[in-house]
Image 1 (cartoon, rainbow, N blue to C red):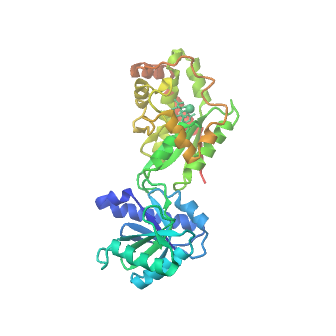
Image 2 (image 1 turned 30 degrees about the horizontal axis):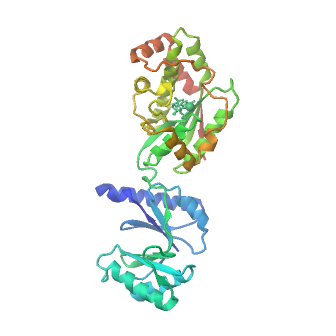
Image 3 (image 1 turned 135 degrees about the vertical axis):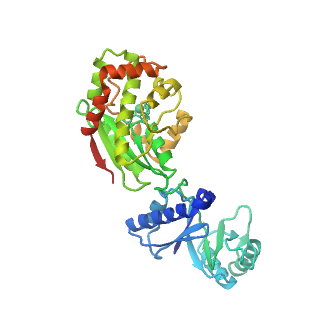
Amino acid sequence: MVILVHYAEIGLKGKNRPFFEKKLAENIKSALQDAGVPADVRCLPGRITAEISDNADKSTICGVLDVQFGAASYAFAESTGTSFGDIKHSAEKLIAKESGSTFRIAAQRGNKKYPYTSQEINEKVGEHIVRTLGRKVDLTKPDITCFIEIVEDTAFLYTEKLRGPGGLPAGTGGNALALLSGGIDSPVAARLVQRRGVSVGYVHFHSYPYTDRSAIGKAEKLARILQKYQPPSYLYLVPFAEIQKLIVNSPVPEPLRVVLYRRTMVKISQRAAEKEGASALVTGESIGQVASQTLENVAAIGDAADMPILRPLIGFDKEEIIAKAREIGTYEISIKECSDVCSRFVPKHPATKVRIADVRRAELEIGTERLVSEALKRSERNKLR
Ligand code: ATP
Ligand code: MG
């Protein structure tokens, strides 16, 4: 049996295309290997094939392919020669296994030197099926569609096309570090960046031992779900309560606190990112969603970083974010109650238009730089997987 993998966007990549194809092929090969399914993986023009043993477990394979970014769709296919005799014989065998009284043949020539057009293949194979199996042709709503792809000197035939996750192959887009709160938004943000081929690590700020470990547990669960789509990653757990207390007990005006917390998180995260070779941070901010997410405050938070902060949700509505969170399987975990890091220290009326000069001055008064280097020393780095 052959797994036939189609990609969408990689096809548009011009000169870099072989780099993306090769990476996707490598990812598929090693993920199948890890799942106990040895495969002979090849890059053919426009698609990737993985030859596997006929009795390999399909659901295991789907589990692997469903998390391969870069795969737009895939199919379990039969491969045969390109003579009409071979193709007709394979199509007949394949359709005979399917229930349904109507069918259609959908042929495609990757190889334009093939002496028949797609339409001619459809007609000839179709006639054969009508004659041998007595099924009827229905081009609009058939019970069975038999896809035939002719690529170089092989014909691939299959009846079911499964959807892959799309995006670009893991490991093609560099490294980023996502600030993972345990809320609904940040896991979705991390996933969107990951989907573009970026390998993502995670950092979570917690108040343990002032609270229980439930928030940490949530962050760990979320990180593990996200992690399935990429090579082994890591999660930093950074104690944050002391820092919050220091900010709360300082003479700095209460409304500035939220931005100060976020700036400090960003600075600590940046140090961790540098250590890990990550070149951007990722947050779940969305304009206007809460008081700290105004344009002014986003700017005041961004000012704390010397590397780009990616905010893939910036223009998303909450409803859309929730739908995505459900889709990627993080929503149910995110909505679980837990003793949140900030809730005890959040001001009643956070400032919505913080001026950069004001927070910078406040930080000098409090001496947050020292806290930043200490926080990373006191943090834990856990391998995921
Ligand atoms: P989320 O749903 O991701 O918690 P939110 O809507 O609650 O986001 P904020 O609390 O303003 O928004 O946080 C904005 C972003 O800051 C989060 O999306 C996340 O990336 C980061 N962040 C906030 N709190 C933490 C935390 N305790 N640990 C790590 N990152 C955090
Ligand atoms: Mg939150």
